[in-house]
Length: 342
Image 1 (cartoon, rainbow, N blue to C red):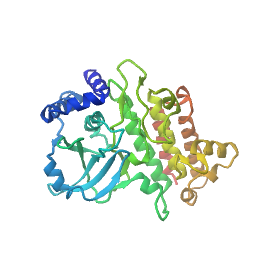
Image 2: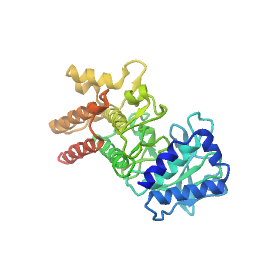
Image 3: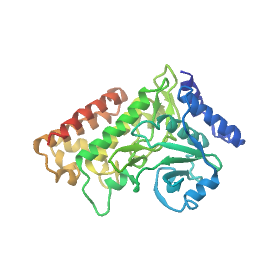
Image 4: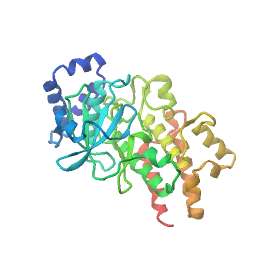
């Protein structure tokens, strides 16, 4: 419970408090290490403190950008003869605060043992905004948008999409249930997901995550996130609940099913478009062509229908009408098990 209170207090710091916190690098480092330790029940976690000199050398002065999230660039590098990924916040971003970087470090360190979270090796506070360093055990970094929207278009198999949905749902459900103060991810979108060489999906960004106070079911905060994925209740009221993540997950599932973006200048809202197609029995017309081109017959058709129905439950306008994410993951696992039958 103590970690829950400490984390909630951390996530509510103001920008001015952020700046005061970072006046002393040594003080900041000590506080980070204390938070990381308390988040693991007092057990030590091998999180390294890197110097700026080490990371500049490891990345060849941040030369090779291999990806990005909403407010960060991702660089590849090598440290002690091992490949690493380095995430550097874009300093000009109006959304980025020092508290966001701190929460990213603390929550990622707590989640690093989860198979669907990119493992954090360490951090450096010798930059204006802290830099995060991740393990990278594969040669090619693949962010989910590269698979969803390739040029030219290539096959992205249904079973792989389903596995990605299950993996990410599993990680978010863990955030919701594993801590005394539940954590809401708050910015679920393809850009924050990387796929390793074995096809396992991993989250790499927790800077907008927020904690719900112990004993409460919601928290109010400013509206942030990625356009097209936002929960309408949260967008209107600023009130965050666990169902905020459920809505975003439903949008992610619709994107995986259709290969389309959540908002289109011509067709409008993907959610409304899918609802219209389902209502008018034109279900297959909205699915990604590469999925339809696969074999699978009636069993695959049933899986796709079940997945679309599940996604639409998740994106109900009212949070009370959405399922819990644990239930969503259980349903996806049931669907995923049946995929191996053909």
